[in-house]
Length: 396
Image (cartoon, rainbow, N blue to C red; front, side, top):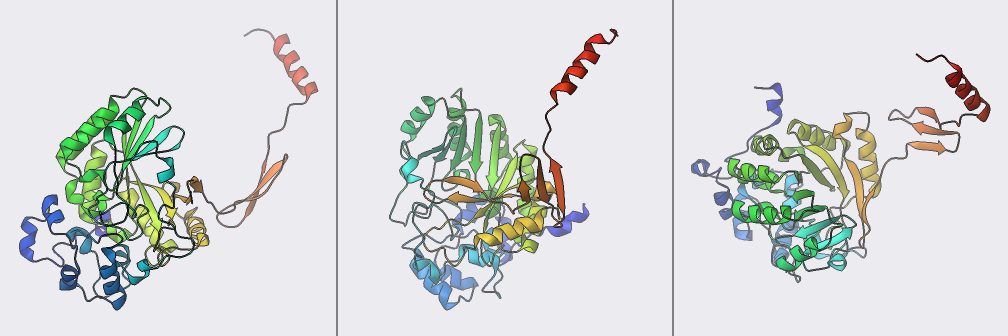
């Protein structure tokens, strides 16, 4: 056993009776026993007035659903618990700030066919389901997931496949939704097989929070099936180090052993992970799980998210606090998804102090300045002299 095992813990059975342990590792049991009503929630937690009002409003915007595995991470004594803030609705969700919109990334306006978003030249986003194991309260697609919003996802499968088959510029397909790993192994296998039959599609990705919300779903059978469809990447979504339990590490290990490279996409959230210390612990634990921190997202201005969104300066501060203070493998790229459909825009601390034709003046993580001279052109007289030396030298 590695000394690093002390960083990972199981929280089962937690709020559940010890008898539940017999079925705990069955992902179907986990799904059947999700917390999805006020009555179920109040069996386990004493809610604040803000939370209770939020739950009553949730049925009109984004459903509440929390797997037993993830629910066990909630600190019942702390109403500001970072896990609690992510999945239990709050009253603030009922208010829409002036800058907030239902479709902040402009996905609906980039759909050549329903369910397929083509915004970048060589890749598409394929929305294959509107359901998740649990629902994040800051979800950028809350307009269409969970089945209670005003908009419904209506993926036209054959039209989407026809578009992909007839658009050779597309070489990369990202399956998302909702969460594709909620599908049965057989259904997901059929989708991946169909995509792999299209010659110009080289690269397939799956975006999923299942390894965090429902690690029991990552079975050996699932991993064996995924192994048939390489190159296949999975982007997971963990926001706080507490989410990386021993069960999650084992699930991620099964995926890694099946040859699936993984990157993590976090969302920067007030009261959840908006500090250098929490982010550093998160990214270092991710590497121990064989997951590369990939993106740190500025929270999209989705309706009802103002209580969770941070100023942009906070993300810059976090990246500066990581760069040089932990391995470069652990430092994600901080990005803002340009509101209205601008795509991912990288945001970095300002490390370039000055840059002209002669040199760049750079600032390192310690604040010290360094000069990098831009390359000089070889003077014509020197070039002529070198040629003369080369051609007049005796052959070896």
